[in-house]
Length: 108
Image 1 (cartoon, helix red, strand yellow):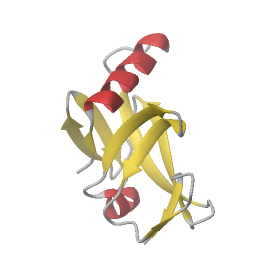
Image 2 (image 1 turned 90 degrees about the horizontal axis):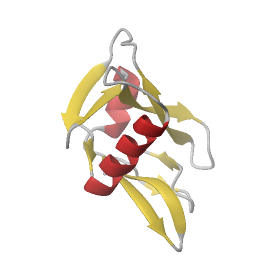
Image 3 (image 1 turned 60 degrees about the vertical axis):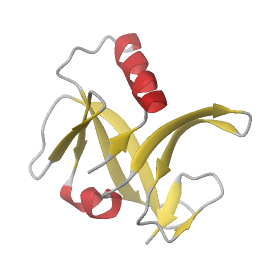
Image 4 (image 1 turned 45 degrees about the vertical axis):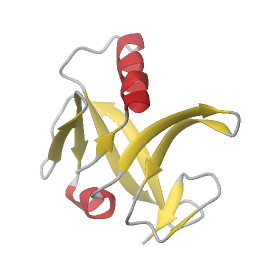
């Protein structure tokens, strides 16, 4: 399961509203090969289920993960930071053994 903080929830809801999306859209969280640590996080909005999708709802946000990503992201918390050190979504992934300095890639 992936959880979402209140700050991340607010940002997701704002992006959905600004994008003119209806309530059929959900947040797709995935992992792709690449980045300086080997695996990169990916966030997108989607309204079509794919074979093998795992769905969770936390804090009022519906989240989809493909099966491969689920294996890497189980237990991850999605947060949003807007401080002086950077602005954007942050992944607090207990499965990551190493992360890059920017926090956008990881390895297990």
